[in-house]
Amino acid sequence: MRLKGLIVLAVFTVLFIACKDDNSAENFEKEIAEKKQEEKIFEFGFDLKKFEFKRDTVRKGDTFGIILERNNIGYPEIFQIAEKAKDTFDIATKLQVGKPYTLLFDKDKVNDSIQKPTTFIYQQNLEDYVVIDFKDSIQAYTRTKPITYVEKTATGFIENNISETLENKGLSQVLAYKMADDIYAWTIDFRRLQPGDRFKVIYTDKYINDTIYAGVHNVKAAYFEHNGDSLYAFQFKTDSIKNIVDYFNEDAKNLRRAFLKMPVKFGRLSSRYNLKRRIAYYGYKVRPHKGTDFAAPIGTPIMATANGTVVESTRRGGNGKYVKIRHNATYSTQYLHMKAQNVKKGQYVKQGDIIGWVGMTGNTGGPHVCYRFWKNGKQVDPFREKLPEAEPISDSLKTKYLEYIAPVKERLDNIFFLETESNNTESTITEDNTTDIQ
Ligand SMILES: [Zn+2]
Image 1 (tube, helix red, strand yellow):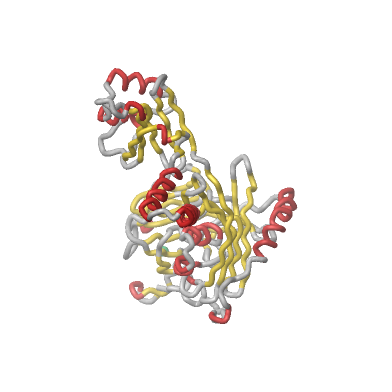
Image 2 (tube, rainbow, N blue to C red):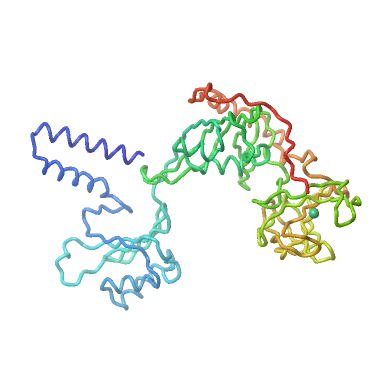
């Protein structure tokens, strides 16, 4: 956006000068071309005007040596360069296919019959690059391009889904992931947003060298109106040593729960916890189902729904291959019918860690994970439990938090929805009866 703006500005400036001097169209075009070249002249800390340069990407089979050899540098010299550079950058192992590199050549030696580069610049990613300079003495160093963060705000109305809303407004889908999978993962079911739900966000965009857009960096605060509820979220660091960052509401309640809702990312709730379940196969006798089944294709990763210690990882009877995790004195969870486990007894796992994969071991008619939720030694329905909040804010931090969010909340409250509200249907609160019971 900014770059475009600059070019447009440059074009207008040149156009203005051109008209004034009554120059021909040819000159005008030339001036634009010059202007464009000038804009790109400083890169990697070099004034590229002073060099001839060649840009390329690492191809399959390329090594630092092969690239230099292709550019007329002989092997004794390559070894010497590699040896001197090795503390900064291990040339032999670190070149990745498809990554860009630039070779600089001395301008006054362009007419020599054999042209040799003086500098090799390898871009590890959009920000970081390595310079290996062998013009006179051999030097190697890594640098990071200057990064800027620009704070922005956005609003949106939901008509069908959040992705569509963001797309229509030209906003990044990353905002949807951040809101659905991170900020509101425990408080809003994004597959059941209502027409008329709306949101505001304060977020930062990342730019490299002030011009290259590198995506949404962070969401600082959000506000979501869902089903008539107003949900505020403020990002706050609770532990700067462990770098623990969470989202809390206006009363300092953690928006994250100690438990994930589901042990699979994409899965269909195929059978709920039901103590009165009757099954035809058993002659319609009551066969309670104390688990919650999520149908998903074989091989789908199964996640630990909360932090804890693996107390069982084994295979037994109808359960098939399963894992049981003890989270604390109150809660344990169990995951059945796995294709294979990914953890061992005694291992500590974190929320979201992959502990195994969906399979069909034990008694099961199709691929699914039977998720069992234990509270004080009894199996309960996790969907009916009021699950504990994750890591509440400490009393000492609470005052600091409330002080911090006051101006942020005011800012959020002062962002106005741009759309006309009349286009949106009034949302009503409805009881959620849409459960898939087997
Ligand atoms: Zn089950």
